[in-house]
Image (cartoon, rainbow, N blue to C red; front, side, top):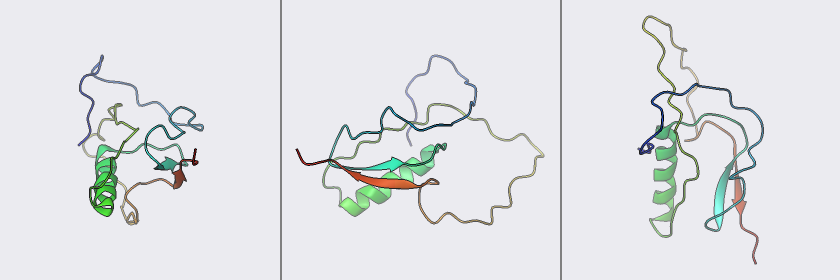
Length: 106
């Protein structure tokens, strides 16, 4: 799974995710891409599952660039805290709405 090689500090504040991303919103590599349409955290497992599905569909032809990285550690819930009921099963690999984008022919 994807993990940062080295970080300056061991722990980071969780923070809040809000607003529309401007950096990394345009295609820098390749012809096609998936663009996130909602501010949301994505785990390394979800990135890996999406990458596997994508490369399997492409039959490993071509290259894949992943421009997101799980570099903010979010700790687990403490002991003896009730979890969510987990009734909604995710239909897609990523928990957010995405849009298919293509590079304009030059």
